[in-house]
Length: 264
Ligand SMILES: NC(=O)c1ccc[n+]([C@@H]2O[C@H](COP(=O)([O-])OP(=O)(O)OC[C@H]3O[C@@H](n4cnc5c(N)ncnc54)[C@H](O)[C@@H]3O)[C@@H](O)[C@H]2O)c1
Image (cartoon, rainbow, N blue to C red; front, side, top):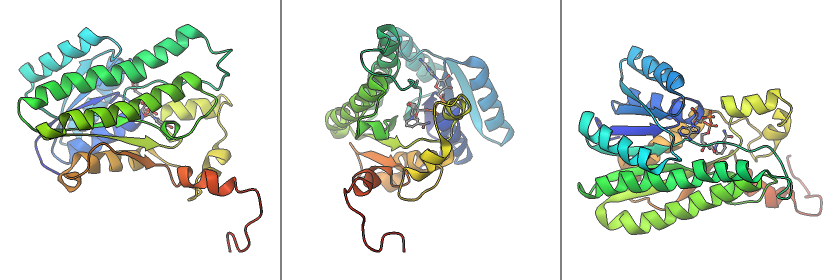
């Protein structure tokens, strides 16, 4: 890990973003916790400072293009040149057919998850280009590889994966790496709330991957920090599943016959 970069973490006020902010600050990065929930961002930043880290807070709605431009202008002026970005701001959708999905809700999911990724990545990469260096990690999902009955969210995460690949091609020549991680169901506050309301079954989640484990925000954060680090200097354009083996298990478990010796 190269020390002392300025790292912007959108969605840093909760879940995967928070866990990543904690690791980056502990590694000596100056962290900007950027979130639409200012109180949550302040709480995370205070925790980072109490642990000896350096943290700033910015309020942002990543779906607002001009606000994202203004955010990066502000950070570069008042904090310094941005060297790393983790774009973790995102919203979920409850299971629903396409026919019954409310279009306004679908548009909001696309605005935050896809449009926000576009705005944040371009605003960051354009500024990094002037310095010929930088690393970005986006939050895709196992939905980037497989369809589920959450159409707006699903499509937004396929878009994040493809956008990550396009940006990696565009900015590689400028020394900027753009990657994504694809988490499985991760026990963040957002997922915990869906478990509590009966929209998700924790045992089904545990059994859905080859490793039969619950994935925590720290597992995802570890992968993100790796992709931002010098150890990943030759890696760009990948969407890395951090999924306890979810992607590989789906086709394997769907094999239409009992497998002799399985699990022994
Ligand atoms: N938790 C999972 O199971 C899971 C799985 C796959 C992908 N992801 C993705 O990981 C990312 C983080 O998810 P999480 O589970 O940590 O969620 P979370 O709800 O715990 O945290 C998301 C954070 O983003 C902020 N946010 C939401 N909309 C915003 C906006 N318009 N502008 C700025 N900030 C905004 C929220 O205030 C919150 O602090 C999301 O992109 C999500 O789609 C999560």
